[in-house]
Length: 318
Image (cartoon, rainbow, N blue to C red; front, side, top):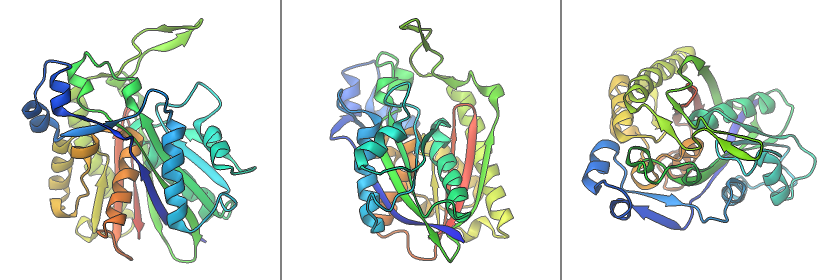
């Protein structure tokens, strides 16, 4: 038994925050943001929206594309860094909103690598026969943990959700998965604050050493891509589409160049979405599926790197 993605879906909040809007909020410029990140705009959730709300819409779209209903889903995994609350899990809250009854539901927290981690986990359940149809979601509301006075970080992030339905298949879909982490980098990219005694203790906003993140990301994204194709006895030239985590256009270009993959084969959404953390890969995947770029039997490589540091890749045949 194998697993294969049967349908994709996504959701972006209605509000769009452009670089010109940010010019009025902090000391920055459209040219500065474009040059260094490739971002022109990002979507921002309404104050009363939670990660499960975004996940709900993305999930409905994925389930419709897969031709399944809430009665068919028997596993829910949500990758998120911005859960609705401390507990219960966002996956349990989403399960209730979708009307899915009596199936395992849990969150995965691997920051920007979260969707890759969640998809790899779901593959183990589906390919082993433990479940038939897994709903795998990446959903983030980073606008809640961004310091809007910090021009070095507030220009980078956006909100959104992407989802896939992973179903049993007689033919291989997920070919391999590769997950890594190195906790010695835990302070390089983090939200170091916590809640204790009913109050926030420490810094509740994103803290990042940009230069260190850039260098590490380019290295491990190249390494894990090579690992994925080597295990499957393929070459990077065999990849039809590379869908990397959408953090920064310079990281994306540098990674593609090192792998020898032309930019024409790279799905890029960072310009319109910003960095949506665990939602970025499924958002980009859904876009490329729906606009017809990704075709049957093509090889697609998903890869991400995030705070922790965590990183990973999933190689699949569409």
